[in-house]
View 1 (cartoon, rainbow, N blue to C red):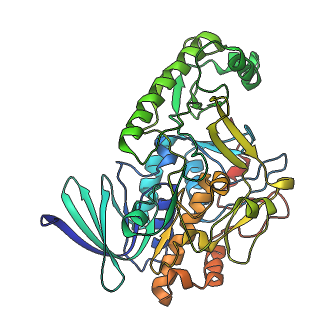
View 2 (cartoon, helix red, strand yellow; view 1 turned 90 degrees about the vertical axis):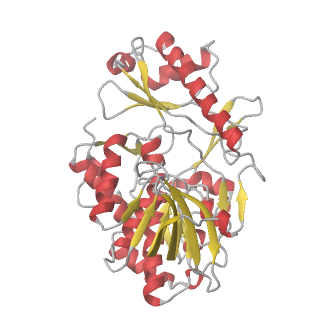
Amino acid sequence: MYKKLQSIEKVDVLVIGAGSAGCLAALAAASSKKHRVMLVERYGFPGGTSTQMLDTFYGFFTPGETPKKIVGGLPDAVVNTLDDLGEIFLRPNTYGAGTGVNYNPERLKNVWDNLLLEAGVQLLLHTTLIDVNQKSNGMYECIFWNKSGFWKIEPKRIIDASGDADFCHLSGYKYEVAGELEPAQSMTTTFRMANVDLEAYEKAGGKKALAKIMAATTHPLPRKEGSAHPMNIEKCISTVAVKVAGLRALNVEELTGAEVEGRRQAFVFEKFFRQEVPGYEHSKIIGLSNQIGVRETRRVYGEHRLTKEECMLANIPQDTILLCGAPIEDHRAGNSGEMETIWQYIPQGGVYGVPYGTIVPKDSNTVWVVGRCFSATHDAHASCRSMAQTMAMGHAAGLAAIQSLEKDEAANQLNVQALRESLFQQGSVLEVPDKKAFTGKNDWALNTNQ
């Protein structure tokens, strides 16, 4: 079928998908400086959700009045670089998710580029996985397509960071499809607006006034909640307001419909903002997300499956590879058909540990899975999907792949304590800080200049 192969590549570690999880997996794997690492991405830039649709990293800090910084290590390098460029500020603990690290997503594309290339990662953009063949020795051949034609890549270790678990799907690993057991989280087209008079908006009551205006409006808004927050660019705001539910992101016709509906809703919101919200009278949409934001599709069954009960117990098991304190944030259609967000907080501002087995597909010898397709139930996934956590997953998977190569350890038989030591040496936070704690080269956690 693929007689016209343009290239056959042999690599040590192949990372599929250059979202925040995949980028960190590639950076971590390349940190050994001993192995050939390839990162493949279907879009023309890295970053995934971090550059396609959002402008804020959540999950670095716990929610509440006394936030603790619970993610560190290589993810800090990304924020440090943005901070050096003057491209971040901290958003207050709004909408219940905790302090957010706001950044310029266009600059972040360039930052991801530079970090990956400086680390020696071989980056292939505009390249899509289309097939997987398992060889007799248990290894895999991955078939990709790009403008140069078909490529066959033969990796020794694979990290599936595709978001939709495309490699795991094509290679036969088992997974749950969102919506089969519980309603799938809705999809969101984000949009940005320019020429907003933020001073007038705040004088009129800011987000509290906005909530009241939304509740009383006669505009046909799909939901009467959501965020509209300042960006790094003066007089510009970014939103998470559009909600598209009931359509499957793994069905191309339904995904197409979701894209069209998301854009329609965005301009319904624009009309509402311009007509009813103080400070927005002369504003207009200047950008939509590159694609509609998909919160969940396939969730792989791993050696361990994170559950809501584990999150709520706030335990940190011995095989923890990252921490999370984010609430369960479940975007879905309510009983009346209107969109709503259901929040459930970890008791007493707690933090839980995410076990190593959540990033290892069941019975895997050479494969890891990170990002929103990792092994978790619907509720646990709705807590542990913030980008700081997905970056921490990638960090762990990249180091695990290198340890697997160098120690000849199967993914599902890996010495997790040795992995934890490697993570600790690179600055990861694996225990809850006693007090508000900051790590990283720069003290960006105190950068509140906006």
